[in-house]
Image (tube, rainbow, N blue to C red; front, side, top):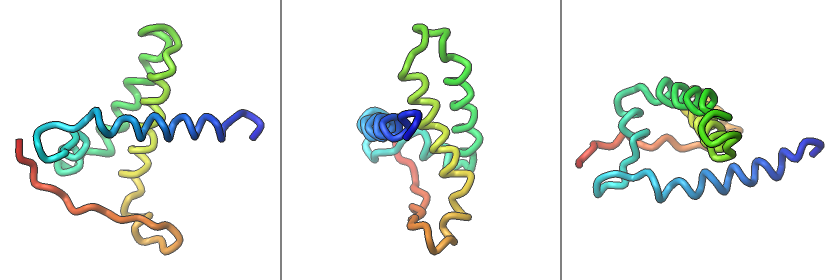
Length: 105
């Protein structure tokens, strides 16, 4: 790819995978985003968090690559929540919607 997108997407994938052992709370492997989803506000919260990292880029620690990786991660999560139902009905897209969980802390 002309602009190295394949390597960048690989780096993004590695970053996203690395986050899954960092965000859990309590004893039930619940992430804050799971709470947002149960409150039907995940799309909006992901979009707001995406904007947070976009506005912070270049200001906290200079051009911080991790801020861009977080921004991209929240863009992916925003995409997931924005199009979850549409993609669930698309036979060409393999996707499983997890049932909403009760939250025990």
